[in-house]
Length: 329
Ligand SMILES: C[S@@+](CC[C@H](N)C(=O)[O-])C[C@H]1O[C@@H](n2cnc3c(N)ncnc32)[C@H](O)[C@@H]1O
Image 1 (cartoon, helix red, strand yellow):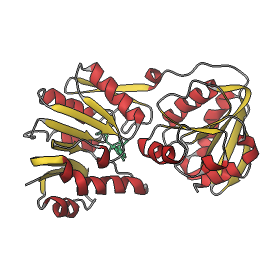
Image 2: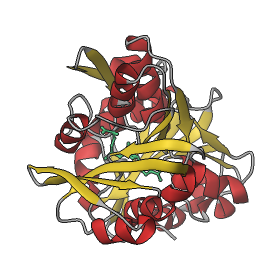
Image 3: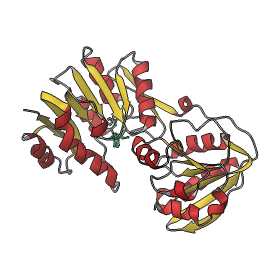
């Protein structure tokens, strides 16, 4: 079980009423807290949790519309996303109910506890398993935050790219993505997928450059998909968005998969996502279809791509990143 869940269960009686667990890990916590509902924004966690706790998991950028006696935020990585989620949870906590914050010390729980103090006097209830549990009582009614108030935008090739809180490279173009967008020429068009689309910068540029192509943009995170939809709308571009986990959830019959795939040091699942992508992308491409991606030069992707496709070329290298290309022959 996730250590943060273990910390909650040390005082399980606090969560026996109508409880909302936001950003919960995909573990068995809901078995131990039968009155609790989960709120997640990640399709992979939703899939795993929904399998066991059907009807008890909410996948969205906004909280469920009902009120809860108790709400809990599992601290996310981004400070802006924490701000948005705390506002959302405060608004759906009953008056005199409690809003809790749980997270690992290394994830910055002490800093986040200061954000919680916006809602009243905070109390540290527990510190164990390298985690802390904080609480505040909600004494004032507030309204749910607007996601638009947590948006940041930037411009690339006359396109306005909008990202919401917590989305990769929030408010600016990533260095790897910058290299990739300089190498979007001669892509086999017809059906192109931007895998792990984030705010949609690559997919939007592909649609701008190849207007006849059907462009799909896929991400596991509903905040990323909401950002992508905003980016497409900003620029009057039509494309298909997919909320889904990994290459398994991607369409088949593609002529190209273009990606800056997920990579975060220390987070095992993201290595798995990219390794699965490199291995199975070929099954989603038509003959002559291409996988083109950018990655940190130190990542040993070339042998994996070579193994899956029987070919792999380095198209460019700059600033510690490489562009790889492989064709389905
Ligand atoms: C390196 S970022 C690239 C984002 C965007 N394409 C860009 O260039 O700014 C990788 C993206 O992959 C998404 N991702 C992570 N795991 C995923 C999965 N299992 N399935 C689909 N997308 C995933 C992340 O949410 C993130 O938006």
